[in-house]
Structures are given as C-alpha cells and as structure tokens.
Length: 554
Image 1 (spheres, rainbow, N blue to C red):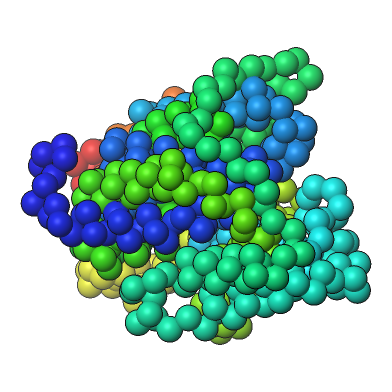
Image 2: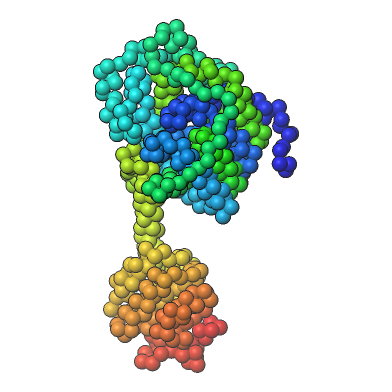
C-alpha cells in the first residue's frame, strides 16, 4: 500500500473536514481546562492530529487532546507552576518514550491492561473532568488545583452563582445532551452549543469569558530540566506516554471494528510519539487517538491517513483566521461541553451490567476509579494491574490444582484406564493439564501429599502436557520427591520434554529421581508401576526386568 493512499481521496477529505469541525470546540475546551490556554489546545489538535496521522499505523484515526491526557497534563502544569520550559519538556519526553515503545515493539503489551482497570481509570477521568468544570458552570473558578479542591469549590459556587454564566451553561448542556443525531450530521452538537452559548454571551454580557487569545503561529519552546523538578517531569512524561499509548490503541481497536482493517500498534505508537514530541516543542497540549472524532471521521467517509492530515489543516486554517473570535467564548460554555465529554468517558455500558458479571471485576473497577479520582493515575493503573494479575493467577492456580488428580475413568486411553483401575489405590497418577503457574506450584506439594493416601506405593507425575517448568514448579517437584522418599514410596516421572529435563537436572533436582524412574510415556510408567506392585519386590524396577517397558523407549 502506498504511503499516502489516494483511492478514497474524496471520502478522506470529507471525513477530515467533518472531524476538524467536531474537534474545534473540544480543542478549545481542553486547552482552557489544561491551564495552558485555548490556543494551546487548538495547536495540540493541529500538530498531534497531523503528524500522528502522517506517521501512525491506524489509517482512519483522528488524534488530538483527549480527556485523559488533559487531566494529567493539567496536573503537570499546576505542579510545575506553569513554567513552559519544564511543562513542555515533559510533553517532549513523553513523545520520545512513545517512539521508544513503538521501536521496541511494546504495543502488544500495553494493550494487555485488563478491562476492569481500563474501565475504572477511564470512568475516574470522566468524574475528574466533571468535578473540575462544575464550579465554572456557575461562573466561578475552582480554588486551587486538583480534584479535591475542585469538589470543595462546588458548594460555594452553587450558593453564589453568576446567573448569566449558569444560563449559558444550562443552554450548552441542553444542546449537547439533546441535539438530534440527524442534525449532528450537518452541525455537530458541541459546535452548535459553542456558537449558541457565545451568541448569548455577546447579547447578555456579564459572564466570565476567555478574553485575549493569542493569534498566529505558535512559538518554539526549548525544553529544560532542573534538579528539584526532574522527578516530577520524568514521572509526568512516563504517565503521559503510557496513558496516551493506551488511549490511542483502544481507539485503534474501535477503528478496526468499524473499518474491518487491522492497525499496526507499534507504528501507531511511533506516530503518536512524533506528534507529541513536536507538540511539546511548540507549547501545545499533548494528545492521543480520540474515539469520538475517529468515529465521526469514519462515518463521514474517512479511511486513510489523509483524513487525519486534512483534519489538522482545517484546524490550522481556523486558528489563523478565527482565533480572535474565541476571545468572546464564555467559560461556562466550554465547561458545559467538557461535562458532556466527562459523562461520555464514564463507562456506563459496563456499570449498567456490572451486577450481572463477576463481583471481583466490579470491585477492581471501583478501586481503580477511586484511586484515579482521589490519588493519581499511576497508582490507580499500577494497583489495578497488580490486583488483576494476582486474581488471575489465583483463579488459574485453583483450576490447575483441581484438575491435577486424575482417576481411572478420566483417562482417554482405554488400556491405560483399565491398567490404572486394576491397580486401585496403590498407584496414584497426577496429570498436569498444561504449564504450571507459580501460584499452583506453591500448593502442589501439599496437594500431592493429601491425594496420596496410606495405600499408595507408587506415584506417577505425568508431564506429557507440560512444555516447560519454572523455578517454582521445579522446587515443587523436589518437595514431592523428598516426601515420597520419606514415605517409602516410589516416584515415577512420565512424558518429560527435553526442556523439562534440562530444568530439573540443571537445578540438581533430577539427581533425586533415578533414570530408571523416568519414562517417555504415561503407559510405560503405568506398566512399570504394575510390575512394581505385582512383584512386591523391595528393590527399584529396572529396565532389565521384563516385562517392564524401557524408560527410554517405552
């Protein structure tokens, strides 16, 4: 495929044009919410949108400032006192990290974050956006930065509202929540709300407005670091890179489902990283793949990277020509638009059905949501991933342990089943259904000890479906061998692969199990166990004792 596919040129131009119109009010709103100003949000949409499309791996994706990215960036902006050199150093570094993620092919791993964790932190971000904008809806600014000060400012704002700002905010909310979908194909709801609210603000002055908005092209900003802020910059860069990558790749999956295509996740990360690195050099708000704008692009005919580039150029023309008009936009209008954005980010589809699904997943989602709102996103994602991984290991371990002991009727081979049945309780066969997790290995010795009762004289560990062992599983085998020796039982190993043998012998565990007790198949191990039981011999069965099958050739 050509670098710039032109087979769908008309559709891509129409899709990019429509996505640009939809992105305009959102870019201004996100810029204002970030603390860097509306023009920074607009240039974030222009730069990230253009370069992520040009170099990315999802043809129909539209990129720009998003709710999750703006929430993090606003925190960085506040913590670094709005120092441009430091703030945008974090953005540039975040872009470079994303490029590194793509170069080292980490895209497939970033997408492994469990859904309850994604749902929790996305919903938490939605709550944060709403909390940050409620005071502005009533004509007041939150006292201090962060979610908790914003929530604390709400009662005072409600008790002492600016009535004109409140009226503008209510009008904005009414339009964005009730705008008919068929009208939205002509004029997007956020744009209609922005125009109507601004017109009302001009006719009835008195509500807080944006005021002076810089015009022209952005200025170059040289990133800088200082010793006392280095950790803050590095932490912010990593969080922006991780969150932007997850946000973009999730949007890429949505685009794949709609276009029946398959994106290149690593190439997409490189494109997003280039966009954010350049955005940081020009004081623009960082961005990621934007789901709503991508959907609008696809529904309007966009399929290839030209659509995202057109979207950026449309916004650039708007910034150069119409930026002075933005000075008249009321804060309450942007607050209303962002409240709708926050509402849409909350995972209502899952919350409505959560009571019908696993309780643990719901609890995990709530924990991540709470940590996102009241602590920070890094803690929320880290705790969520760790808890999800531990829960999965616990469930997997439980399943592996439950399936470990195999009775005679469970064997698929009738001959093996009859042979094991004839030996009754004197031989206990343990069949591993697959690779052993370290969680299962922890309880393996105890489980084997319980299942092997006093009549058991031979225990067989069947490794036929175990491709490899880790240290935990190997140590569990050593414990089982020691227990068997002290109990006066024979321990046979069957079906070991070369990798399994190499691990056991390499750790010195194989020395406790003689070669005559190792068999290539379960059938030969059962035949040897039968000979051992029927002969009643006190010595070890050997390969020379007919009719015992050879452990090597059995």
